[in-house]
Image: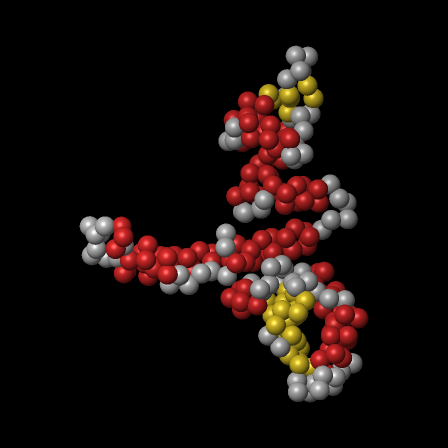
Length: 144
Length: 88
C-alpha cells in the first residue's frame, strides 16, 4: 500500500491534488493506516493516471467523473466513450477557432501600432481601437 | 421546394447508426424530390459543423440550420418535415 505522498509522486501530481480529487469523489483511499493516514493500492494509481490523461485531453473533472462512472457500468460500451471524445474534440476545435479569431484581431492591432511605441498612451492606436470598438469581437459562445 | 437534411455523426458510432436507421425510415415516407438526405462525418467536415454551431458528436441540420443539436426521434423529425412542407 502507498501513502498519499508516494502515490502522488508515482503519478506526478501533488498530494494536494490527490486530496482534491478525493474531495471531488474521483478517488478513495483503499484503507486507512492505524494512524489514520490514507493508503492507496494499484487501482488508485491506474485511476490517477486515467484522471491525469483525461484532463490532458481536455476533459473537465466533471467529465472525468462521468468517464470513470462508465467504467463501473457493465452495459457501457466503447461507443459511449468515443461519443464523448468526439464531442470534446468538437468543443476544442471550436475553441481553437475562437483563439485564432482573437489572435487575428491582435495582429490587426499590433500592425497599426508599429512605429509609434514612444507616443503617450493617449495616442496609442491600440487603446483607441479598443475604445472605438473597431476590433471584430468573437461571438459570445466562442469566448473562452 | 426541396428540404435538405444533414445527418451529422461519426463513422463507427453504433448509437448514431441506430438513430440513422430510424430517421431514414421517416425520410423514405416522403417524396425523394422533396426531402434530400446527406450524411456528414463531423471529423471530416469540422469547419462546417462548427459553423453550424454543433457542440456534440451527433446532430441534425435542415437547410443549413442546426435544428436538432441532438439527434431527434422519428416523430420529431416527421413533425418538423411536415411543418416545413406545409408552409405556404
